[in-house]
Image (cartoon, rainbow, N blue to C red):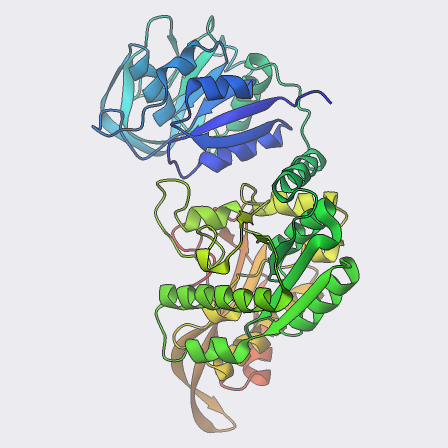
Length: 514
């Protein structure tokens, strides 16, 4: 089989690095993200159709600024530098980078010269997303400016002969109006990519990688949460190694109503492999007693997961590899793999815990976004109701209880969450709202029930729309629907006396409250 075309992305620590990879894949071109420090000789061996240099938090003028191998510009491979990647290209090839007189952050109108292969068919002017303090003030020899703003005379530059380009703005974000067209131009006009990559192709690649790791006899223990990500990971690993896969589902007591039973039923029917349900609810509740700080909760839950898996693995006998359904938004929010800040810790991010005693960690979804995971699940033939089920955090309802976690509080969330999901389903909105759930805020308020004073909990409704879960907007639920949900929660859920609606986008908020 002929080698697939691929684009290699050098990661300089930008928050949007994986978005670049995603945009490339949306054009049906395979992409890989590698560290900025990879030598040019290794890149040459990989035979990419093109190379993209990502943005990043550093300035090229910093003493310890990340500098890629200068020889990559002599490989004869098309290259596109984005933001920091453009500034680095200019600096290394003899241009000049200086602090901007006026910084540009957010939407900025950019004037574009469509005479370049990179900017072909782009409108003369459009809004682009800028995020920079430094900028290129002099093009390197052989380059010409092909875009400008009022404050940035070189918003894009091009060396058509060597097929090396740079853009100061971020074409990968949705706020850049013609960003996808610009990237498509780079892939097709410049790199000559024909678009031969699909989710089916990704599945084939992932299966071969799993087989390369495990060999003919290696066995795998999969940490199964029952959510979309671990379910797709299970299907992928099962395709690769069949009955050498063992799934362990840890029931921590924080699942949604009826979900533990559903998870067990679905997986026993879908995958004829060894399946273990570990009932560890009492342990998790005991270890979280008195804990109120969100990060401490997450760390305790992560630690207990490891301990439970370790105990189950010992019962099962020797298993060679440990697998989990980590996806890229988890990695980014946990600050792994880039210079990104830690937003929140995810129990399944951070590498292979040594105490588990496994030879290696298998994470076949680590570089995919949620919507890509769903597409992969469909390509693998998983039932649609499983693939498109509501996203659910690994720590479960424990992080939807603000403050100390107790069985009583979790039950309030469980019942109120069921009501919200039930009403959204009845309204036919399940497919148009990306994620929705309730949160026990920890706030008490005065109410009146049966002519008596109450002083009970406030429940918050959270519903968002998003493609990739990196950014999200609050969903505009119909008022009548919100009213029905509120009435049912107050009437049907003990100790819930008030309902509020969360109308905050991500950013500045995260989707979950903790």
